Length: 133
Image (cartoon, rainbow, N blue to C red; front, top):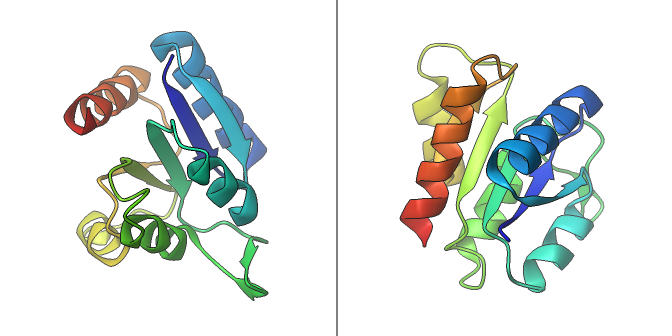
């Protein structure tokens, strides 16, 4: 079974991601907004995908507020987690944001919230996981 971590501060978005990953793709899913929980799960290995909210209100790392771009950079700079695909998710998408956010974060792909086209999201996840395998 594939394993995904969803790092999301909005409960509705977190639930939607979990349902799509579990029901449409057969993943087991860890939902969190806590960077410590994310890094602990990554250290355990066996993670096939991370979905990372960009804003992450209320999340802290080393006593400082942190967002999904910064957390993604940390994951991608660590040789033990750099290979795990990260899908950035944001509700604040403007023209040019995708390219800028991907460049700043090192993420593998980008998706706009809310997720309205479930089939497109599922296909994106399948492709990311297939490419990483």
